Image 1: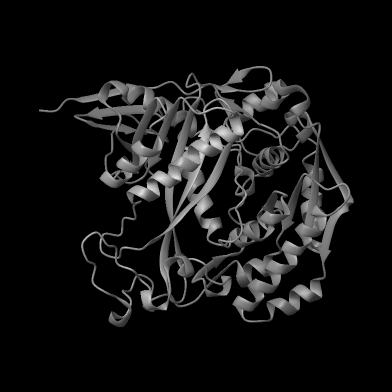
Image 2 (image 1 turned 90 degrees about the vertical axis):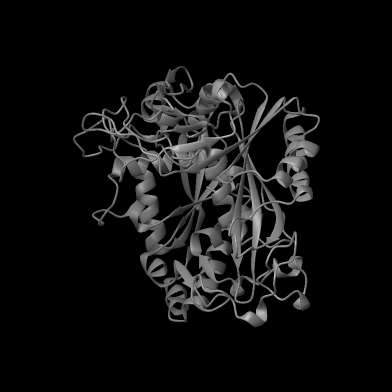
Length: 500
């Protein structure tokens, strides 16, 4: 009979400007952001631009001005929702607003655009907001980050647009005339090879995409302005909306995102994994009205530097039979060579250790390609982190603690969500599910789990204490969704702040 091994890992310590803490908001309020340790590299001022209609810009500007002072949360539990002390108090930087960094879009123009069919409305409004970002980027004194304020009527009309995909209904197989049988070593292609190469299929016109999301498309359209953007909706800058977060929590989240996108470092997680590069490989789908291909996207988070960056992998045909995309040996080799090259370019040296995360099992081809690409790296580890049906019941009212690690035979299960002693509760929407960890040997499982926990605390787009997946994988998924809107002839910006 297999014994169940259960142990609890301590919460990773988070480093701030003048001290350490176990919760993000407490650490920022008490010790300031980590970049205070970096002297002149700490931004003393965050210059914020605004793009939107007169009404949406006014609403966003009003909330930003409100963030310069203390904002009560209005909630009873200050462990879950502490008051916001004010931007300068928290970030040790001033929040600068100026009409020169505002670009307003005529409401009549927007209204006329929204009278068009959803796809046309989407394209016109995307052009209007992207143009505003590019205009602000050309100013003699440009802002550090631009808030794109989206009005409710735009979101109601074209936040998402869809059209028919291959085979008609979602999930339906394509017509037999557009399929061919898979031969040995081949994947089933959902486009006709006679009509062109997979490279051509992976460069569609934006209007041919099956599903488009306005937020993602705007991030992609603004990317070549080299100016990070923050999307703001009425849920941020209006009050009394259903399901809305309290104003202090909104101010916390907005302030962390703006500060990071302006070049600051809110916090770092203490780590002993020196010169380690964590890599997340994820796949995203590119569906058009005639094709279905898959891209591999890649994200990295450095153990000591903390910054993440993205690289776009090659297009892959979609296999409708096993539905689990994977890299060929050469594709894995080429993608991971990029990792080493970019790491060396940015840090001036090769990593000593590389840890690769995926949500699916590594194939023999992927392992062979990784070994060839990383032959000069002393330590290479491959770990699968995936959702599982495994559950652990705990006596009492609350579920298992975050940081609970269960071992059963060769399998390990890590709770990255769960009861938080620091908050005194579990505030998740459902019963927490652990991640199954495949790859680390039993004697390495605890150290690997500790690193995963640390990487769940590296989301600088929010003041939340942690995410369910490590940032290596959570980031890679977001990258993929936005990269579907970036043309292949345009090099995507590698930095994390352009995808948040």
